[in-house]
Length: 459
Image (cartoon, rainbow, N blue to C red; front, side, top):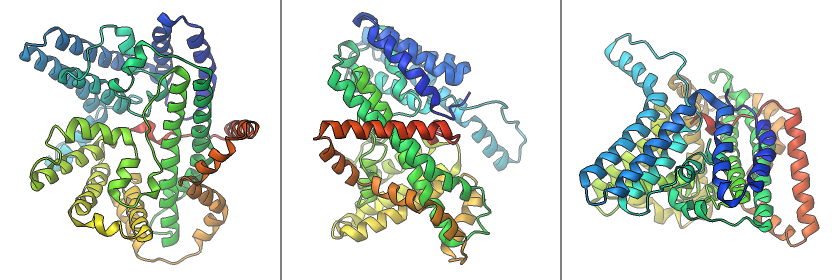
């Protein structure tokens, strides 16, 4: 069963929270592990063993490293085991058919694809999360966890299990052992959750409907304005969809006593691609920087080597997102402009607040088109339509239908609404009125709607 709706979350959450709050302090992590496993099993029960193998492999590797601090061969073997199991599962489920297809195309062979091989929910996220723990134990940055219940709860923590943010063990290891849940934390958690929910159901779903319609069209038969309008819709959808889910996860974490790291910081107001990646999917960028880029030498090496390091990181970033060449090209697309900015562009971009933002938004639209269309021939058709200035009036109909949603989404992608809300918060009754209104609007929409995809569930 794939999560196509968030109505299950509404049915699941009250029971999970009640069980968690009623549980004695010593049993809270056990309850958290149990409800998280139930949450995951409801979504895809047949892949629960994959999750358990990831937990056991990284837990066991951590203990071996802790018990043999002076035996390098044991430590190296344990680390290699955790990497082989965790990345091996990720590679098998996510990339096997991709590799087979490319081997067949390259060597003209006829190796059969593996049928019924689907991607386990959240495997890209929880694999990186578990490996961050084992790598940090190997480095001596943190002590290995002896309590398997606590470690299991960390890996399968249900608020951010499916689509992030990627929470490293060092982010919450103290809270796993001792955390206080106050009414202020619960109130703030509810507030953050509701704003994330509103992003998802009121903005992402509505603007996503426009992209869904354009996506199903023949790109050679639509006008240039409609092609750009469709890509703009996808750009807004993926931001509000993913940042909305992340915000919901952060809010739920706060209600459980955890403070998860921020994952988005208004990326569309960035003045360079470099700044954009400091604001977009912050936990993924941090993971690649800490566990791949810096170990490769980071920027402490010669410029050619630094550029090679960047190339490897961004190729891996693109490949992490999906088993398709468009994702690899998407990662390398950003690599090119990051290198250009490091080489000479950044000082020029800093001179203009307007032109720098136009530059970023233009490149992002091109990048999101590359991300959205996995079929390379269709992608070529979309780009051709975007740059051949084909006339037509089809875009007027869609603009008329979605103009209010587009304007609202554009405004909400800036800090303006947040600043306005901070002023509203000073009046308690008005603050609560806004939250109740958001909740009622979201419920009304969910009751009436059938379009509730989470885009990042497929990554």
